[in-house]
Image (cartoon, rainbow, N blue to C red):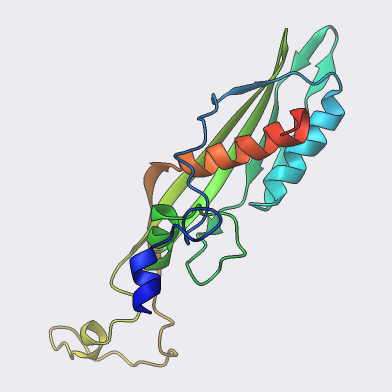
Length: 193
C-alpha cells in the first residue's frame, strides 16, 4: 500500500486513476465546424453520440424548405449525475464533475444545434447542470423528529419520506468538460481520429 501511494497515479495508462485528463486535450471550438456532405449521415452520428450520454426527448432534423436549409435541434431529458460508484455512466466527466455529482444531487441536460453553413455544419453542444433544491436535507432525522405544538394536531397517515418534495432546481451553468467530450466524439465519428 505504501509503494502504491508513493508511486502515485503515474503507473496508470491514462496518467490518472480518475480517467483521461481533459485539460491535456486541445479545446474544440463550440460551435464546431464539421464538413460532411451528407446531412443524414451527420445527423445519425450526432444522434448516436448524444444517445450515449443522454436520452433524447425531442429532435428536429435539418431539413430543406425551398432553397433554404433549416437548423436542426436535439433536446434531452434531464439525467441525474453519474457518481463515483457508477463508472460505466458517461454523463459526468472524471474529476471534479463526478465528485460533485457524488456528493450533491446534480442533474444534466443537453441541447445540440446543427446549423447549416456554406462550409458544412456548425455543431453547438450545450450541457446544463442543475443542483436540486430541497426544503430540508432528504434523510435528516433531527428536523422531522421534533414535535411542534403551535398548530392543531395533525395525523401522520403518510409513509415515512412521503412528504419530501422538490422546490426546484438551481442552475449551475454549463458543463464545459462534458461538452468538449461530446464534441470530440462527434469529430472522431465524422472526420476520423
